[in-house]
Image (cartoon, rainbow, N blue to C red; front, side, top):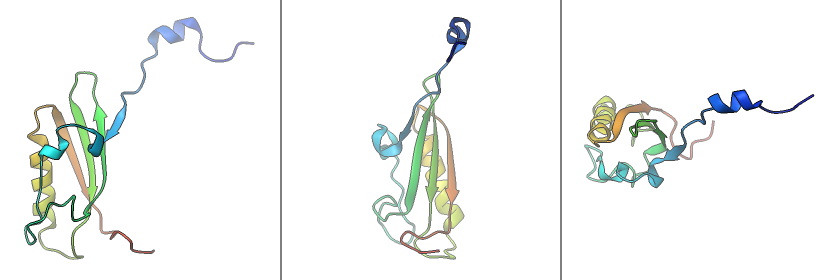
Length: 110
């Protein structure tokens, strides 16, 4: 009995491209977005909860962002989400930016 992969399966094995966070990915910080009501960067405001970078085989990247708003029910939510998406997608190596708006406020307890 042999454990693990056989030599034929190793030849076709392709590792999953590494995922990085936006903080460790050069170029992502070049897409500053500001809250329309407060002239402060949304990252500095703590509105971005998660930012993952998936590197594609062709060198392009897919960016997944999870963020919230400064206040529940803020009417600028969709405008801000679209602004974040557009600015990230302007970066030449970004193939797609997916921005998800969550209503969970940082520090809130369920």
